[in-house]
Image (tube, rainbow, N blue to C red; front, side, top):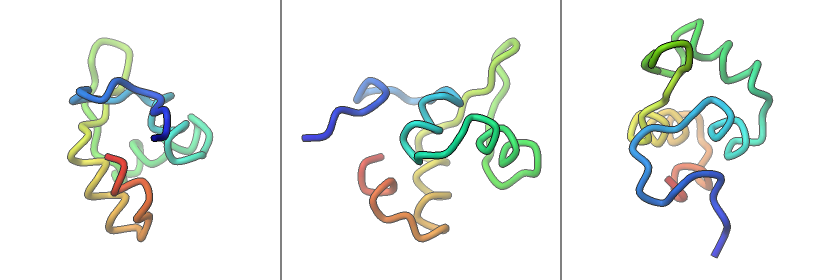
Length: 70
């Protein structure tokens, strides 16, 4: 079993957790949020990405591994 960068029961993921999971930089995740590629919700100063939304985006982009883990 792979160690996930977030708790198994997490509903929302942070930018850092998404970046670690998808193996991209946090800047890339923030850019995806800014241009609308990745739906996110703002909690105070931080962005949170719904796990279900991330699964859909990963599957649409052809990232089967990330979609399966989520």
